[in-house]
Image 1 (cartoon, rainbow, N blue to C red):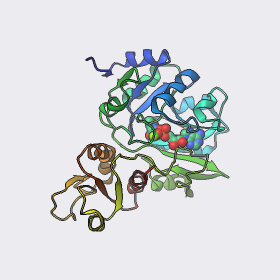
Image 2: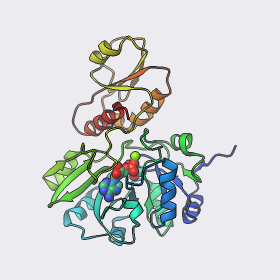
Image 3: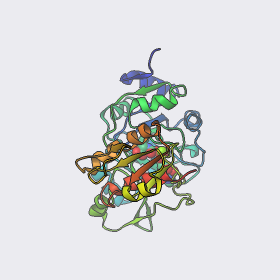
Image 4: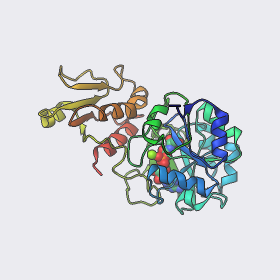
Length: 320
Ligand code: TXA
Ligand code: MG
């Protein structure tokens, strides 16, 4: 069987021009991309993911120079953020221009925009004359994909091509920010840390848990969920509560885990949180295919990328 995974930019560009769906690599996770200006193409994204249309999509552009084609009334601080963090894992909510179809933004008057930091996808964006709407390339509510194979495993019958850019280097989705009364608000924790944002803008408000807030309709409390129940806490405590079951342990360094018969996945034996973030979603997928009744996940230190990792683990622990 011929694979739909490949590295041919021309093929990817042709499918996108024809209104088809293509899996694209980014530094965060793989995206499920379509022409953001073509409503019919965008509708295919929602269908393929089984995603409700009230959950808006991120628009990917090739450089800051493009941003004023799609957004207006852009505050100076937004330009400062673009200058500092693009290309990179930061998505900015800006007042939308009418060229962006309402379907992309679920009828909101803001559009989420970012420049992804991946050479292949930047080259692809330069080869086409439209921006790409792309959510993470996973069925709605499941774990995000960090390799081309992850995308193929679940969506190969629904998309035309997957551009293989290797394993994602950040491994967790972009941080999403917007502005309220001149204050920078973080709606989703991700690959750009709160400290990095504070260093640039000073005051930052974090509002990541308002599941019912229409500004971030995708911030549902149950998300990134494996099919095997996941429990979050300290491993010794979790083992006391669930040790009678067949369990897998998902931990940071693994240094303090007692000798055990259980499957153990160490996200970063050397204690590097960036490495842990990079491995997180692959690990969750792998453990989700293992023969256990529960996944016991270690809560990370609440600093740097640890905040975003804990956010994903918390959402993975909530049953839909
Ligand atoms: O790293 C990423 O951001 C990846 C890669 C592919 O770029 N994309 C991604 O997309 O994570 P997705 O669709 O899985 O998550 C996008 C989130 C959703 O929770 C959605 O609700 C929110 O962004 N969003 C999009 N547009 C919005 C808007 N105008 N206002 C508020 N939230 C918005
Ligand atoms: Mg997603």
